[in-house]
Image 1 (tube, rainbow, N blue to C red):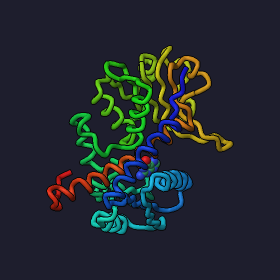
Image 2 (cartoon, protein in one colour):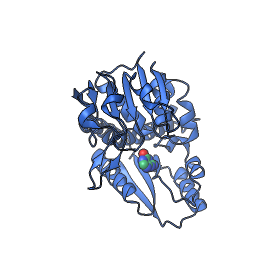
Image 3 (cartoon, helix red, strand yellow):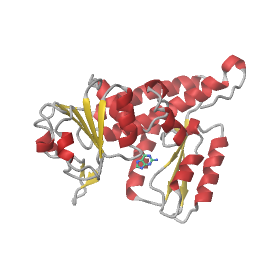
Image 4 (cartoon, helix red, strand yellow):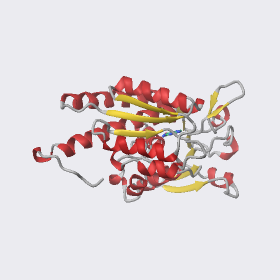
Length: 296
Ligand code: GUN
């Protein structure tokens, strides 16, 4: 069994982003990420801290807009629209979840596609349906999974891949990206009748549910690649995934640890998306020495 070491791979990605940021700075563009945080949810604060640290490392400028829980949908949309217009900002991230009284789809929809570094907005999500070549700003967690598999030369072409979890931010876009690469994809979710009947056939098993020990040894094929995207806390506060690592790792050919697997890859992919957004801004603005507006 070999570990899919997200800590190591993400660090290499961050070095690459840092040099890309340096090149843009030389060209007169300072990549900048604007983050909107509502309330003080401990998980959101922890994610934001990791993202800010990665920005500091890579040289991406960070600005944060904090709001009270009582903020309205209209106030958030107005802030997003201001950031859309701000030419010094290349990426906009609205930390989720938002409070129940805020209509999240409208806030996400307000982010202009070219600054949508989370890849949550419908234009970017729709475009990735076309083919791999149209994957530009894609959701960071599925992108991190693909990058991790690529790093370890795990070719998904023709493989039976089972994705457990069909969220808009992980399961669904991951399934599309895997199909774009020639995998035979089965997506399972909470309505799936017999989960094990699917998972036991998986050459590659990706799990993003948020349920500790959901995947046990009997559910996994000998030699399978297991990617654990779950994040759960034990009673003692320890971070664990959705897979019974101790026992499943005895059967797997490759497996991600939690922590140190997909988590740091998500953050590195956010940095890469921000760099891509800033690079495209720069490329677009210098065509033939004239500022050119493009359709994203
Ligand atoms: N909340 C949990 N994960 C994420 C993420 O990747 N992006 C945003 N915006 N919010 C999150």
